[in-house]
Length: 121
Image (tube, rainbow, N blue to C red; front, side, top):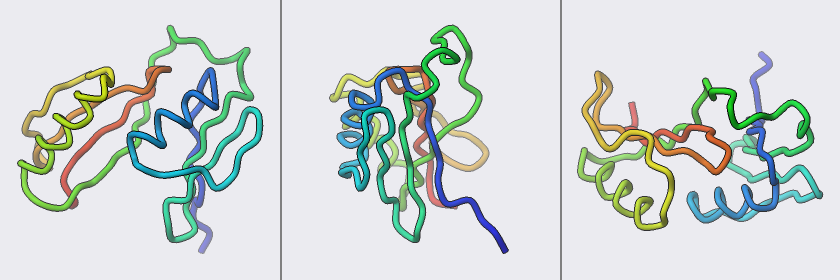
């Protein structure tokens, strides 16, 4: 079976976005080029930021996908992470609330790409 092994997030400034994601997720890049920077997520999976599509990227275009960080533990872990990330000044899209799958919240990166924190299924 063939499975996806890289998730690419389109950004306007790869270096700035790599700093944002590196700080948020406490990770360092495993590959860096001027417009493409990748992080190892484990298990052969990578997350990359890419600014190679500058002409097609517009902040006015709504983002319809999300990166999700699934945390173990109860709702208090979600609330703790929200307080931690809020303290870093991230853009909050939705404060913690209860959804059908549990406690969750949404933030955005500098380009408006969504990042959800939710409980492990």
